Amino acid sequence: IELSNPSKKPLTYYAQYEGSPDFSLLAHSISLAPKGKKGSTATLEVQFVSRFSKVVNGRILLTAVPVAKRIRLQEGVDEMVAKARRKDSERPDEDVKRNPKNNLTKSHAIAQTMVFMLRSHVTHRVPMEVHRIELPCYE
Image (cartoon, rainbow, N blue to C red; front, side, top):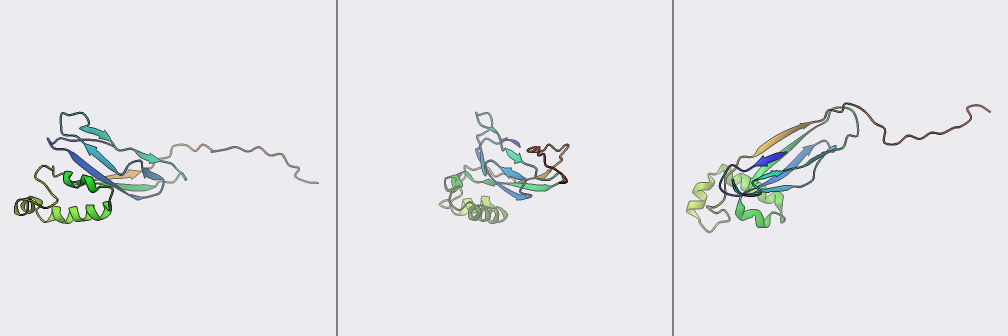
């Protein structure tokens, strides 16, 4: 999945995957530099390893994480994203103006949460290994 940052401020997204274990994320966060700078476009790699030929589904949820919170991205990511979602729904701009000492700063870009639906399509089956065994059928 290729993402680009259209804003003049840096963005960081936290990636969560839900669905079939056939899909997996190679990274759980992605940082984008401001527009016009090196690193303003980045790729989030999704790996697919089919176990069966049937169709499987999955969903990737990309949630924007404010710049001030990037430092704590490794510490309690799930808790941080839940807290950021609650604050986003409670007018974060007013919260920043009322309390400038809180964790959100005026320098972060507010980005929407993105959802990508994944669906497998296996076109052919190739065996992992072929074993040739010769045995007598009747004695």
